[in-house]
Amino acid sequence: MMRYAVIGAGVSGLSMAGMLLKKGHEAVVYEKDSRPGGLIKCAEVQGHLYHLVGGHVFNSRRQEVLDWFWSRFDKERDFVSARRRAVISLEGGNVVDYPIENHLDQFPEEARSSIVHELLEIYRNPPSEPRSLGEFFLNRFGKTLNDLYFTPYNNKVWRQDINGIAMDWLEDKLPMPTVAEILLNNIGRINESTMVHSSFFYAKRGGSQFLADTLAHGLKVVYGAQAAGICPENGKWRVQGELFDRVIFTGNARQLADCFPGMDELQPFLPRISALRSHGTTSVLCRIDPNDYSWIYMPSPAHRSHRIICTGNFSRNNNNGDVTTATIEFSEKMTEEEIRAQLELIPFSPAYLAHHWEEYTYPVQDASSRALIRELKNRLEPRGIYLLGRFAEWEYYNMDAAIGAALDLDKRLEAEQPSRG
Image (cartoon, rainbow, N blue to C red):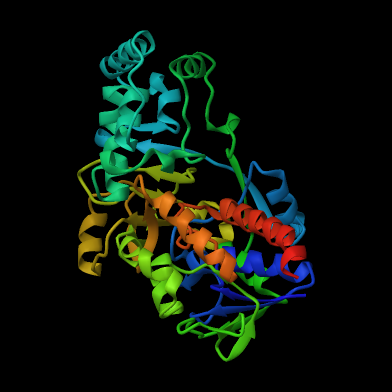
């Protein structure tokens, strides 16, 4: 048995601690907040469930992630299964089903003609390999689709020119159809319900906070604990006065120097760590017009929000009474006055209920980010420090990817055990 300190009680930290406990190790989770959840925390506002960051649902294409998850939850008792229905709300009130490239029949004839001719030109004369996210969208979908949706939407999400975002980010994040697949999907009328991740599971009550609370159950979690000043002592690590063999760090990589002050292995990396880029999210809980959507993507430059997450449709228990609620996201810090002015420009008649600012929600990768994290891991792991999670690894993990990363680390730790034990 080894003693592990797990820094952070988000999905990554809670999952990892549970895996370690099952293997017979001792794990203590240190969380600076007063409750678990990290980015999946929820609150209640006037009887409505409020996802403070995003709208977290669960499914996975990895069978071992599904197996692990359902070994901890009762699918039939505690969850609803829903079909994902996402749409793109274009200027002029036109709504196109997602993915946009599969629904060319929903465009006006002129736009439809341009899209098809551009796709055929890409097929005849394939562009060079894209060097950035912006080039990928243009090269894969053509100018019209790119201008109507891909670039304006992603510029709003990332709050920067997406030509500066590395291609590494795309892995397992977006559909990457060929021209032939796009045309066949339109002829065959393939919609999102036939695609991977087209359905999801969602807690009947409590949303993703129910997931965090359930994962934390049975674990030793120390709340209100700032994980600063972790120091080495006789080959171990002293955290909050206790000695541990290893530390699993699921916090923000930019805070490593505060957590491990004076650590020689970190010093050469500090300038590059401090240059890692990210941005935050203002989420706004609203009442909105009744609809049957799950996500509404909004590329329009007429307002600053990029999407509506119809969390009130995920479970009717999320709404107090007959109203429909949703979370509207802005990729910047905003005042209530600014929010209320923006809501007047957004479709589906959103009415303000509450808002929340989260400073760190999206890690922004560039061409050097993954190489930096690999180097950090190579330096820290021999000392018994392991990075895990969205901001520790600077990866845009959703919930199932975070669980998958914890499973992968659990296997590596088990493989190391004979040599270290």
